Length: 355
Image 1 (cartoon, rainbow, N blue to C red):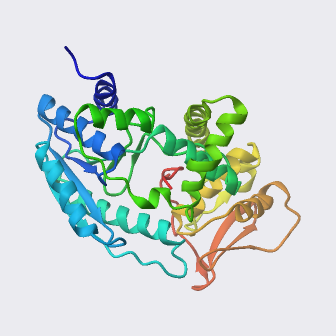
Image 2 (cartoon, rainbow, N blue to C red):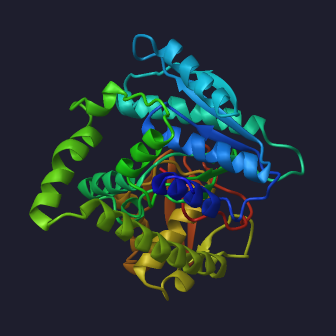
């Protein structure tokens, strides 16, 4: 007799996600003790035994709730009971001006600690280490709705990537096709303890209200299945964005100006493509030259130097940069240093990134 269907679903999803990952790649699991990440830890323990993979469970103590240190130790003990090595990462959450609020501050601190632990697993000359995250179909649906509410465009609506390369290693989210109910069922079938974070029921957080109020209402109005539909939309958008990014990369290569050493772009070459490609190429170029926090308005004004040129002044950009057009080229100026930014033309960088 095989495992419970929900347990089998978690193991199958993880196996599929790891199909392209070398067996020698170290695996790190982010586990909070909730049902999603606990189901992931159990599936990873099974895969580790079956495939003889090295797997470490990491839990983060944010110090935001009474008893958090003891709870983190309990999660680490659960990992050890599953046959995994375990470690506790203690972080300080800087919730102040510019932090984005307590939820964003905690996320920043958590991923900073996990990235540090992931980078420590890297072996020179070996495959990139992998961070396994327990985000679900429901998390993806909530992410899409949050992006829709911000009017953030297709990149935000594409949600979280199932796999993404980061500086510290590779992020994998094997459960984006599974909903929370199935993962709770998998935990129950394996008699695994679950900790329900009270923050997940706190209406001060937008994501909690989406989960408790908005999505149930949409299900009622639209006849159910909204979370799955939003997750499918995100997957389709992600495929479209990958194709557009590849085309924008080709455009950027063609527009790079080989004349001189200032790294300019040919406005004439850029003008031959649709705005959707031009703005992507401009975004990638400006980011690789160090321009931070580019917004929609910055890209539209930068694009006007290509598509609506009538001798206008430079476009001021974040970080003390300015973009101008001269002799048919777009040139980036570091106004703080009064010199061209970026030096010689750079090789193309990645056109997309994970919020």
